[in-house]
Length: 258
Ligand code: COA
Image 1 (spheres, rainbow, N blue to C red):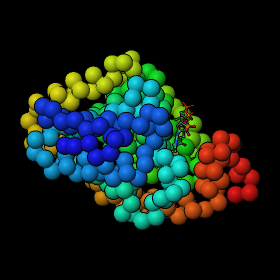
Image 2 (image 1 turned 60 degrees about the vertical axis):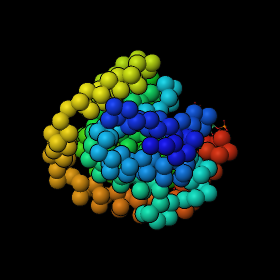
Image 3 (image 1 turned 60 degrees about the horizontal axis):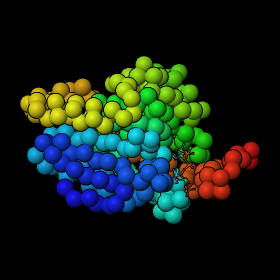
């Protein structure tokens, strides 16, 4: 598989495709082109019988700052065909195992995409957050469904309504991640676990993942579409415009009028 944009590195070896988010100067935030590239990687990995496992990793200091806010203002996702929604559908319906390696901040979709990964390894510097309300928008990637399920309503409400970060220990306790290791060891651990998975019988892996998620697929797809439509509308509304302008102008947003 080729690199589709310079902000993503793609490598396939021994049945494992590794996707590295590679835009550290902008804290690995995602542009439209990156979402399109990641959706293509997932589609190709799904179709290629030679790929048995997918690894998604960032940098030792940052997993992802979520949507690139400037890019979002320039090319907001106004329809469900937008690359961001294509990526969400591709990751949530991917039938092979996904291993994620997370260090540093994982903001917005940097956290919500993890609900669709199977094994998540985190550095002790990992900080997860879903600050959609703080940005005047609403949850995405079916996180309004999956966060309460995985974390319990009380903790999901803190994470989704207050939008405050939670650290690796809390994520481990909630079952969002599988293990915490020093940041320098996370990517190597993810590779070792991915190689172990790749050596297992594929039919058993696929059946096990499908059975664990049985009954959820349709609910996830429906919720993602509902969230996506609302998210697209809210982006154009004054609260989101204020939040995004404030980020670009490096000031605190003022929501007193909304
Ligand atoms: N979109 C666009 N640019 C972003 C970005 C984003 N989501 N996150 C960071 N950047 C840019 C900054 O504007 C800055 O660019 P500059 O050097 O040209 O000024 C650069 O990346 C470094 O970011 P900075 O905020 O200085 O790094 P930090 O280490 O102090 O903080 C974060 C890291 C991730 C905690 C912080 O950048 C952040 O909160 N980002 C916004 C997260 C967010 O709200 N995402 C949207 C989710 S839907």
